[in-house]
Length: 267
Image (tube, rainbow, N blue to C red; front, top):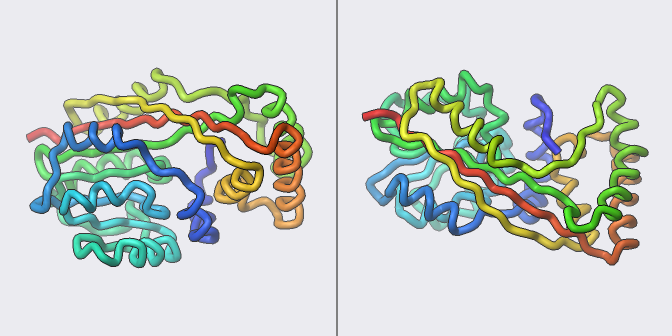
């Protein structure tokens, strides 16, 4: 489910769980980025919203200097420890839109499932300003679709959402489940054009994950709009979801669509 603006702080309350349970990204995605924007030890990059560092290691392995900007203090500390053996890594605690960077300085700015937290006009303008001429912005995100192969399981999970989630968020309109589409990816890619970027392209990648009931419970425990549910209600809600999956065989398949948008600051 999409998250709501203003809940960015929630991820920091479950930093270790977030780092453990949130998925990374396929090798093909990094290959596409590096084919578009060759990166080496002479380059400097910014990661916007590092989270648990799920997307960081391939960039560090190129030798480029990576500065991560992370709003959550616990997540930033976790990543400083996680990447302590990389002298080319550093983390800044703060919101990307609030941190000052030198103009025309960076070869690459990338963001993994995080840039939607940054106001569009502020974020794209800032990225454009601090990239070098010819520098690249890579924005990518994972869009999960639960139990696509098992409508009965999906429908029963929705009963738990009806009883707890939608009851708690009385002002929330129920959201229909659907897969992320190529049209959505193309529309997102074209946002960059409004802010002066050129050479815009996008790609989609797909995978399937299979989680146990307990693993799925842990995963939804890292969703911002789930974390903010009052604890006693949240635990009953999570119990209901976990029991539902166990009644349906104990596992749930998640079909991921990962979209990548690439854009270049003109030379």
